[in-house]
Length: 179
Image (tube, rainbow, N blue to C red):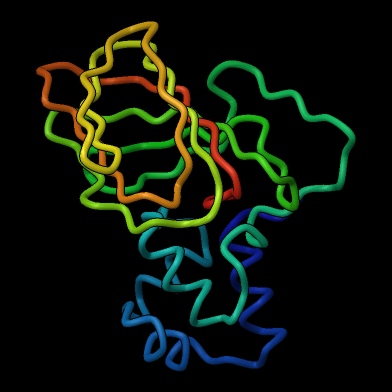
């Protein structure tokens, strides 16, 4: 199976785009794109989204796997995505093309989503460690280990770690955002 960098390079070459063209469309430097393609650096989710948009492909297609009736992911072996400096996701059994996506989201103290625009789908959050402040519509909840919340994504929502230790959350959502 190709590495992420090799897939990005293959897509770029298949579309006959130059590094300069992808750089101009994405706002990322030629050097950075080249390093990603050679697997010398791991892009943030934000950079990866920009590259996918510049290449006219869906983000999930960069992680395609063979279609399977089931998928097993052992502890710590999911695909890791760095959302920003305070939030990391480990994608669990989330095969592209499926209707549900599961992940562990690790939120460092001070990590937050900002206001998330309403979207189609549903979300389920189960706090494993630490605490997470969640706002859904006009309601606010402080969730602790074992606490969970389920909500439809068609209402404004946000979350943040106001605590002093990393919060680990099992997050399940439809439709998938990252896979």
